[in-house]
Length: 509
Image 1: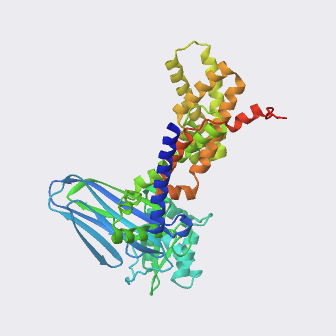
Image 2: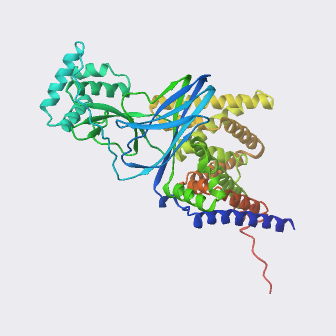
Image 3: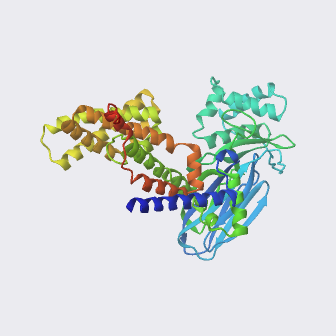
C-alpha cells in the first residue's frame, strides 16, 4: 500500500512539473533550448545615499547611443521620487527629485539590451580646441610626440591610431616615458591622450561603457577614446590602439562629468550588476503576460534583482546534483562519505575545474589523514580532535594557495572555495572507516565520493540544464517526484551483481 501511495505522489509531482513546463513552452512560447535565442543582457544600476532631511536632487547619466545593441526595456525604480529625463549634446540624463529625503535612500535603473547590427550615432559637432599650456619638460615632450606622429599620419584617423601605437609601444622613448610616469590608472591614461590631441587641435573626449558578461555583481565603467574627424566621432581603444567599439562593449555616456551627482545627501554608493538571459524569453514572457495575465510569467525568476538571479542559477542545480547522489548510492551502490558531501565538493569544482579539483581534494585529504592518525596517538576527545583537524585543513589550504601563487598556478588558488568543514569531517570519517573496516574500504569510499562529485560537476555545469532549471523552475517538482520514486527501491544494486555472478538459476528436468 505504501509503495502505491509513493508511486502516485511521485507520478502526480512529475506530471504537474512537466505540465507547467510544457504549458510555458507551447502556450507562452518560452524556448526549451538557450541556443534558440539571442543573448539579452540586463544591467542594473543601484544608487544608495543617506538623505539629510531636506530636498534631494540626484542626477545620473543614462545610455544615449548604444552601437551594436538595441534597447529592449528600460525601468526606473524609486520610492517617492519624481523623475525627469533630458537629452542634450550626445548626453542623456535622469534626474530624481524629492521634497524630503531622510535616512537611507535607494534608486534603481534597469536596462535590457540585445545584440544588433545597427550602429548608434553621436550627432554633436565640437569646436576645435585651443592648445592647452603645459609646464616643462612636459610641454617639450608633448610637442616632440606631436611632431613625430604628424610625420607618419595623413588624417585624424591615422593620426590618432599612430599616436596610440607610439604611446603603447613596448619600447618607448624618453618623451613617452615621461607621459607614462604621470599616469596611475585607465582614466588618467585617457585624459593624457586627450590632452595631447587637444595640443594638436583635434577634438577628443572620453567614452564610458561596460564590458558585458554572463553574470557580474560589481561591474565598473571603462574608458574609451573618441576623436572627431569633422564628420563623425571615431572610437579607439586607448590600451590596444584598435579602432572601433569592442565586442560586447555597451556604451554608457560621454564626457568627463561624474556618472552621478547627489545634492541633499551624503555617503553615496553606486554599483553595477548584470546578467545574461535570452531575447525570446523576455519578449514572449512580457507579451503573453499582457494577453493572458499568466501568473507563471508574473512570478518568473526574471522578476528578481539581478544579484538574486545569479544566486538561483547556482542553487537550482543543487537538487540535480542530489539526484545523482541518490541514483549512484541506491541503484549503482557506490558508497560515499556523507550523503551530500560530494555535491558540496562538486560546487567547489565549478571554480577549480574538475581535474584540478580532484587533485587538490586528494592532496588535502591524504595529508590530513596522515596527520589524523598522528592525532589518534594523543588520545584527544572527539570535539577537540575535530577542531584540530579543521585547523589543519585550513592551514593546508593556505599553504597550497601560497605555494601556487609563488609558482603562478592560478587555478589552484581556488582551493579556498572547498568547504573546509566537509573536508575535516571527511578526514575524520575516513580515518574511522580505515580503523574499523580497513584501508581498502576507506579508499573505496573516498574514490566513490570523488566519482559522484565528478558526475555532479558535469551535470551542474551543463549549460542546457542550467537554462532549463532557471527558466522552468517547476522542474524541481519533477526532481522531487523522481526522488520519492527512487526512495522506495529495494532491489539489487549494480555493484552487488558481482557477488551473485556464480549463482545459476535452478534447472528442472
